[in-house]
Each structure stands twice: as C-alpha cells, then as structure tokens.
Length: 608
Image (cartoon, rainbow, N blue to C red; front, side):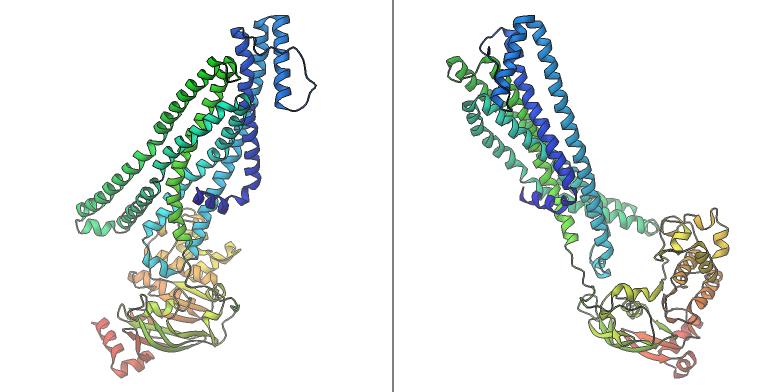
C-alpha cells in the first residue's frame, strides 16, 4: 500500500480539483446510500404491523441524526393513521426513490471525475516515458533490448492503467462507503457493530495474504514479455535473412519457448488473481452468518436495543459493505500486479544520462575557426579503445575525408563531435572551447547529418524535409529539395510534398530516401556537415544524383566525410586514413598516392 501511495503522490497533484470533487461526490453518494437503508425501517414496520418505532411527538428541527430519525418516524406514523398503510407505503417509497436517485447521481459524478484522473495520469506517464527515451544518450540503447523498452512504454503502462489507475475509483470510493455505512451501523447498534469490527480485520488479513505474492510473479511475467517483444522486433527487422537461411523453424522454436515460459508465469499469477473474488465472497458470507446468528440472539433475548425491522435494515447495510470490501480487496490484488509494472517503468525513468550539460554550459550560435581533436581516446565498454590518441585539426570551410577498413573507428570519430558519446581521454574543441563546455542543443544546431541509412519517418515528404526546423515554409522546403536533386521525383508523386512516404520511407527508392535526407540537411543549413557513407548503398545513377547533391551541400561548409568509395573524396582538402583507431596517414589524394602506403593499397584494391 505504501508503494501505491507513492505512485499517487507522484502523479495525482495536477488533478487535485478532480480528486476533491470525486471525494465529495463519493461521500454524498455513500451518505444517501446509508439514508436509504434508514428509510426502509418504517416501510418494514408498516408492512409487518410493528409498533416499536411509533413516535407521537415532533421535535424542533435541527440537523442531527436523532431529530431527523424521530421526525421521519413521526410523519410516517401520521400518514399510516390518517390515510392507511398502503398510502404511507407509497409516500415512503417515493422518498426512498428520491434518496436512491441522489445516491446513484453522486456515485456517477464521482466516477465521472475518476475517469478524468485515470486517463490524465496514464497520458502523463506515457509522455514522461517518451520524453525520457528521447533524452537518453545513445550508449544506453546499445545495452538495452529495443523490445524491452517498447514493452515498458506500452505493455507496462497499460498494466498500470488497468491495475493501478482503474483502482483509484474503488480505493477512493469504497473506503468512504465502508466508513459511512459503519457509522450508520453504529447508530443502529453499537454493540453489534463492535462485534463486526472484531471480525472484519481477520477476514481482511486472510484476503490480503494471498495478494502479496502477486507483485513478484507479475514482475517476472512483464520481464518475459519484454523478451517476447524483442524477439518480434528482431524477426520483423531480419525477416529477409530468416527466410534466406531457412531459419523459420529455428525462430518458431525460439519464440515458442519464450511464449510457453510466459504462459507458465501468467498461469501462476492469474490463478492467484482470480482467487480474490471467491475468497472475499466466502469470507463475506461467513461474516454475514456469524452476525446473523449473533444479532438474532440479541433480538430474541431482548438485549440488543434493536427491533426486528431495524435488524433487517442493519443486515442490508452490512451486506452493502461486503461488495465494496470485495471490490477493495480485488483492487488491492490489481495494485500489487500493477506496481510490478510501475517498478519496471521506474527502472527506465531512474536511468541517469551520462551525457548532460554542465551547470555553467556556454551558449554557441556560430562556428568561426576550427574543430580540433586533441589526444582523443574512446572505448564503448571501458576495455578496448576504439580510438587511440587521435589528433586532428579541421579549419573552417575545409572538407576532411575519413577512409579505412570497417571497424577502424571512422564513425566513432564523427559521433563524438555532436556528443552522441563523450571522449574518455583528451578533448574535442570547437573554436578553442571544449565541446563539453557548450550547451549540447546549441552544439548540435551547428551540425547536419546524412547517414548511410536514410533515417526517415512515417510522415509526409514536407514534414520529413522540415524535420527539426521551426516555421519552415513550402518555398524553403522546395528550395532545399531542388538543391538535393529531389524536387522532380517529389513532384511526380501522387500528392507531391504532401505524399506519405511510409514506414522509414518504404515507398521510396534508396536514392530518393537519401536525397530527402540531404534536403533535410540543406534546409537546416548548418555550418558543419557530417556525411557517413551517404552514397555507399546506391546504384550508379542514384549515386551520381546524390553525389551532385552532396557537392552542393558541402559548398562553403566544414565537412567530415566518411567514404568507402575513394573516388568520391578525391577532391577533399584532407584525407585521413584510419587503422585500428588511429590516423596512420593524412594528406591530399595525390600526396597519399605518392606515399605508396595504406591509402594507395585501398585505392588499388578498389581499382581492381
């Protein structure tokens, strides 16, 4: 329960008004519910002809239970004497109907406000998780499974909604009903109600004991669901390879093992969960029977200060507590189940970003002189250095090409510049200032990226080109598309710039996707460009169009270009040859050919 209160304290403050209204309406609903049972007593007296509640004197009005009860019985008896029992029953029945109407009205209004709280909290939770995912640095995602992150963002949030937030109404309503009805029962018979107080905690303890084991089992089930989603995500991404290697059966078996394990865990959990209702019903029935026997004994002996009709109303009131108590115990089961999901969500929310701005980070709006790598070393896992003591100065306006075998550290080298990762040793300076001293958002505003894999979104062409650029106009987007050699094919699509390109741009060819990526970089208009093998996956014609667009993009900009096709970087101002995390050669194309070293070998291999 303590953990549940913590969750509510975190997420309920924005909904204090709704919470207050829900509490008020639930309290009024419970009060009218208790009054409805009080109204039943004169009805029963009239039907059974009992005179134990005959009142002949009307008391001056004041807002107290004793006066209200006295005057209600007075008018009930008066109606019976003057118009007969049937007419009295009709009048009392009309009053009962009015009371019940207000009871259900206030109960509905309480639930109405609880819906706003529930959906608002879940909305906030999803937004917080998404904001956290977007803010986390890239190193976090190299260690975590995508499917597990998706599971926490969707399945676990859904579980919190179904289990924890769906219980808010019950937890803020049912205890009110129980307290109000118990107070009414005390007014009817303090002796009998004291006996009830002794029984209820025993029943509650037995019911609650079973629910405690749910949290651990539910956590195991949600972890396993993360594994299942990871397998599905891997399958969708690698379906072509699965089919090419006839591995369908292997993947089916792998998925089957995970599904069976999830089924076993969920069977164990749900069997405990479904035990909540029958156990609470059994305990409620046992308590009712005990009260019936004990209360009946008091009435038969004449020692309970309660008439038979009042005892029947008392039993009705107590039985009305049973349902809220059952729902309350069921809600507690749900809460244990949902808190396990909340724990997994908190694991994600509690991750501290390793790449953050310093407290006194400086703003930067322009790039004026140079980029300088000073004695830079970097390792992904703290064991093997991917970059070793790298030194390089890139003057403004120059194009530097990075070449070398795969795995030599080229992509890591450029990923350090926008602080996707932070260096382990040394520093990277922009205009003489360590990039870790700049505001990260300002630093990244100086840079544009075009990658080997065109990262596009399931949106229109216009929105993909204008991605990250505030208040971009159609004229701006068209101008950028023309520079990227993309305007002609965009105009030929069904809806032009309003055409949806599908998941990751699946409706476009590789060359078209790449030209949209270039148009996006053109529109951003950054002073520094990072091009990571932007033409390596294209056919000859697409490569020519894309290379022409890249040449336009790099004009008057400082550019870092990773290239496997050395023919595309012949005209670079400086070519750096990477090998095992170090720059082993540097110079212009002709100079490196004359050296007859590592670059010459790479160049000759491509010619062959």
